[in-house]
Image 1 (tube, rainbow, N blue to C red):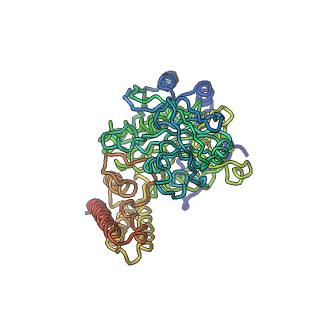
Image 2: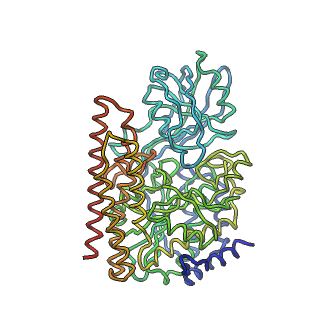
Image 3: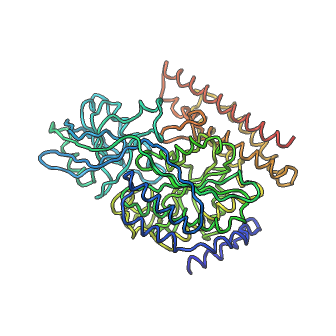
Length: 593
């Protein structure tokens, strides 16, 4: 059975006794073609796109194709602070090892030299732990003034911890025979004055696994290792294309679709296929613009790879008030349409968007899906504003196939380990799978744009909050009482039940219901995904649920004064949660008055 046949059958899949995919949506999906997106993938496969000029050149190519289809596009030109890596090498015991410097590490072309100390680490077993701390605890005395070598990608948490312990350099041993490009700063987007202290101050080099094992053998022998790196850092004018497909009824309200168009090397699976997906959606949506109630805004970001999501962060800053007042949901498009990607697992979605996303994937593909809490990654630059979100990485290969091929965990490319390497070339893409994934994104955008009542279920979020609080309370034991937070969530949950019942019974007009649903996002998304105030960007580090309560899991590790300090922090964090729950409940109940 072909993907097209599966899609047609799935479009009529009954959910809760009803046909959820409207015939009008199917008409729009029927106009999806592989021609334009595949041509863009083939074109982007011919040149790398992390140098500033090549990024702008690829924007011009996008704009040219949009113009060919008659789609108006606004090209913004922000100044972004980027770190562009060039070369690196590691020398030890008379041997020179090939290496790559992660973006935002310090450029040290003059060479640094030091003793090598080995800090053992484990490789991530899944995407959900890819960004977590994975190295063993080692005292600062062992690392001070030395070069640290450790397994894993050069993630911000690893580099920051070693830098704070006094290391003068870091060698990250990647899992396989290839070396992966990446970025090692925890600063989200262009730094501001408050961010600058977190800017990495040491040299970092990534090596492959065979070379890393040889270097690890030298650790502790007293032999010196030399690292040299060359990077270019500063302000770069980058092009940022935005398409606005205006809705017919409430054009000021919009769904935001977005993905990055800069890549490491030619980056076919990450993210040429995503760029092509957005291009085809822009073409089809423009053709069917008369069928949209709300608007759909499509943006392609520069600075994802070399600026830690600098393009999307700039957009969130520059258009913060418009996003705050009018955006109903954001969807990220990264690594769709890759070879062997036959399953939808580890899909990012917030609790309130889960049912909507699962239903849409099932309707279009006939497949069930598995999702998880969005990581602090992937151009989710809108959490602090309070935008609900779904999707990030797209379809992927099965765990069984990954194990059969001996692949390790990576952060894109449908699970292909060509991710962030020079091997992410045309064979990583799959035309038929890309068409299927385009239809998933397109169906989600059209359904969200045309929904009479926004399909965001805040009851699911309240249930998540209760689960989180119960887990934190169990960890805290007798050291702290989270009853006020739990009671506040229970009260919100009761109000939400009444609200959704009133909406279903038509006692609340759709316009008022939608206003309340959007306002809830501005309160509940930040409390669940941020520590910083609204309109600031949290670090690119793992973010636990209800983060201001997360210290509850650490209370048993503290004693004496430290325990009191932790309890004080948790008291303040609980106050923030309780206040947010009360604010959300007031907004819900005001609609039903």
